[in-house]
Image 1 (cartoon, rainbow, N blue to C red):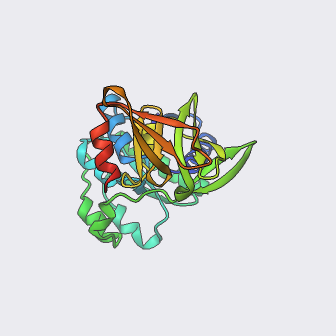
Image 2: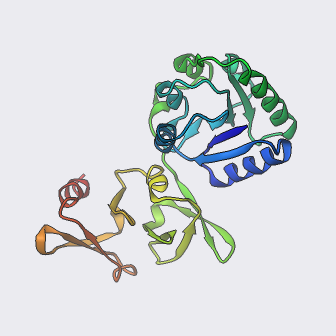
Image 3: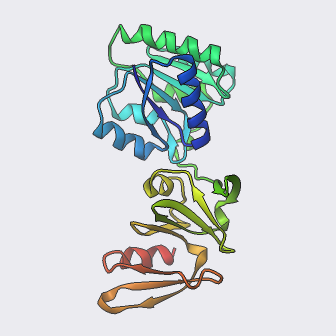
Amino acid sequence: MNALIIEDEKLVALELTASIAEVDPTITIVGTVGSVKTALRWFAENAEPDLIFADIQLADGISFTIFEKFQLTCPIIFTTAYNEYAIQAFKVNGIDYLLKPVDWDELRKAITKARSLTKQPGKLDIDVQKLMAALNMSPTALKPTYKEHFLGNARNSWVPVRIADIAYIMRDELNFMVTNTSERYILDYDTLDQIESMLNPDQFYRASRHCIININSVQSVKGLANLKLQLILKAPNHQFAIDISRDKAPSFKKWLEK
């Protein structure tokens, strides 16, 4: 049985992967995605898995909207921090839920139910509005919720860093975040696209394929030849120059003037 995990907290996804391996070693995790945007791209590029584990609240919206876009037939197990009053919201065909932190016995029961449902294939009937009402979620829950902290890895230690304290994020074989005080931490995410989806676009801009910058870290902008721009960051990161291509220059100027 192949399973996909939709979870925006990297450590939670790793813990769930390990728990699944302990409870049912026959399940193969074929992917882990951390946002609505990356999940939609995953489903567009890959065959439907046999089972989905999905957090409800993701960095850029709620996972319910993913299942409105695609006509899925596989069972879905929602992993959620909502209390038990939410049980009735999941009493529809093909849906189960697990409360965080995930209990192994409950995980085993949910997987057993999923296996039985895979023998009865059929289109899932997910009423997003009904689910939201049962969970007492307002329509604003559909709006993106952005990260407030990242966990950075430095010398095998995890360090919480406020988003507001990040000057820029860059890709150099691994993904790094650099703080306003020039501290550098590894970010445990596979791509900059995934990280970008978790950041408020009013505050952060994808300056290039390899760099995302915080608007509050920009000291000045210098014009270059061919209508390119060069960003000078505030000290102590002022020696790190970032070039903006001619194609990106107009959108960057609009972003900077917001």
